[in-house]
Length: 324
Image 1 (cartoon, one colour):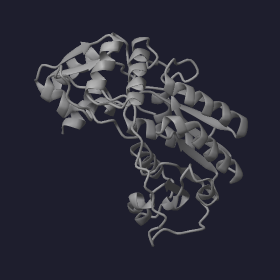
Image 2 (cartoon, one colour; image 1 turned 180 degrees about the vertical axis):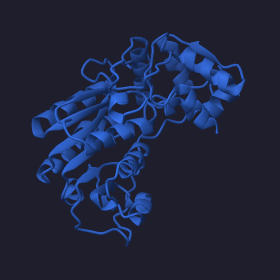
Image 3 (cartoon, rainbow, N blue to C red; image 1 turned 135 degrees about the vertical axis):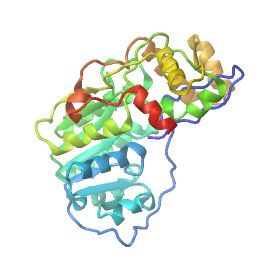
């Protein structure tokens, strides 16, 4: 998933990105010559050209899955030609084009369904993908949902709940309820450092943000080991932080004083509008901040650590890696 672009505001503070923007809609129907066709494969990874999907493919390879046993799908296969060059089976799949899905999911045993980014089309797209997985005979679909999707008040959670319900009705599934991405903040470090501040409306809410690599490793673990069907995993980092705490961690790592400015929801919304954030996205961002304030993006389940078999990446480690 990609991050929304943060822009300078009249208050000279940074806007913490909170949700992905839609990926480009252009698609290529050509398949790189090196990509085998009609080759059965056991694990299908959707959105493999995205940041999380690509990391999931790498995690599967690291766990010993042969490249020929992985199908990486994308709307534009030219963006994952490098995976094809390494022996991964690459196929085109566009959830808005149902006719493209039978061939994409052919031979699937397990599927990693990475949630799509266009919120108003998400549920319909996910249902088409789940139907295709069922038609292909998949025995398991792991879905990247949202932390506390069943109780969260955010607009995003409603689409995840609907997908989870449909998945349960159709095929054995695993709900990978991913928390926030720490990269939603580390990607904005240049802007934060330039302005000396981080702004939001999350109050003192604790956020269990983890790295994409940790979430991808958890998905790979579920897809390569048994006993996960029907499970719901609330995934988040071992070490939660408040936005004030994150500002302090950035200060410590850089030697530059970074402050956190907490705004009322309406002021935060105006800040987003001043930054020319689209109204629909701004509404989602404000809702996410308020959810953080209420603790909806915090978990102490330990599920992520247990799945990946190691401690999760700390905020300090993520900040250091982003600064390197």
